[in-house]
Image (tube, rainbow, N blue to C red):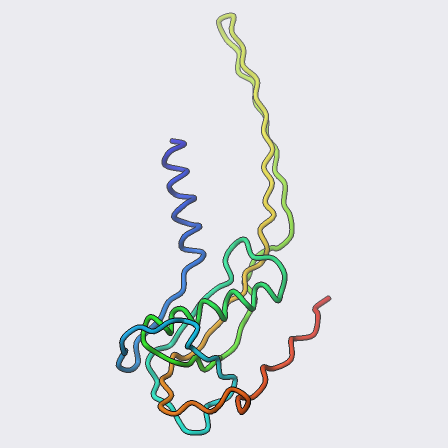
Length: 160
């Protein structure tokens, strides 16, 4: 039983860190993710669409900047696998569900035929809310120089 529970938890953690794509064009040979640029507006010289991308920050990523770095990094890796030299960033959203900490406790006692057994347990969950991102894997034939790329949008205002 414990073995099955461990396998289930491991599989769930892997799925929580997954990125994915839906092909909408023709993939190219894979490139290094460091060669993939992130565009916050369409490049001025046009582009070829390769795939729609999705990623998430992972179940154990804390801090808004770390979450953004994680989702953008995963979009770049997924685009690189498809030979895209750019990602047209489409936006992010926060995951649903609780964030913060939750605690559960339980106990039990069994006795019979002169034997008794007592147990107790406490469970704690401190998983943060994940961030999800969308983008489009693109191929730009003549990418503009780095200094000509538009700056990233400002971070969203803090939520109360």
